[in-house]
Length: 206
Image 1 (cartoon, rainbow, N blue to C red):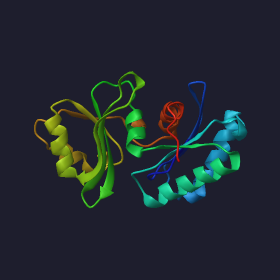
Image 2: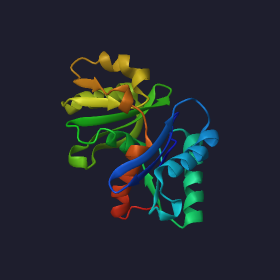
Image 3: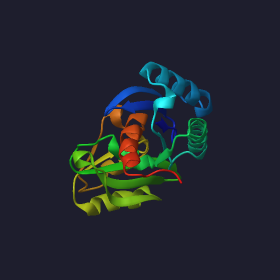
Image 4: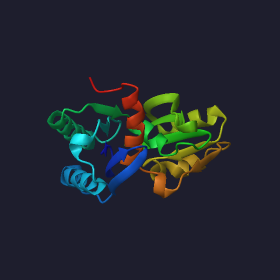
């Protein structure tokens, strides 16, 4: 799996229901510098030959146009060379899946600049992803109001949290909590775990 939709660059290998290897950096280097060396390292450390993989999962957005373009080009290049299918995963679904098994509404929120966020609301009980509200680009004020209207506790994560957490805290009546930094940002481990489910369901790039 490849994750390159934001500042974080991440690659992972998933086999036999286990995250075998993962390499993640958040050091502001461009993905064109880091992604291919990371993939080489994570594949080498996994002990699994690239020819043995079934599919390649990659985030398809929303997120940084440049990062997504680099990730998509890398995935397609590998897919063509290895004759393997590509499984696209939306960034918000992959973020929500970071909290698989947690009860209540999971609310991934990415900074879209200009006081807007890319956001959605999901439930991820029993390792199944349920979309409560579809992903959208929306002002932070409208998103907070939408979360408040749900009337249920929400767990918010994503790179929009440090940008807009003060506005969330100011919303009277909203039952919110922020997840720990260790699970706040995008990681290839959730992309590959969700990618396995979608691959088995036949969701592949046409």
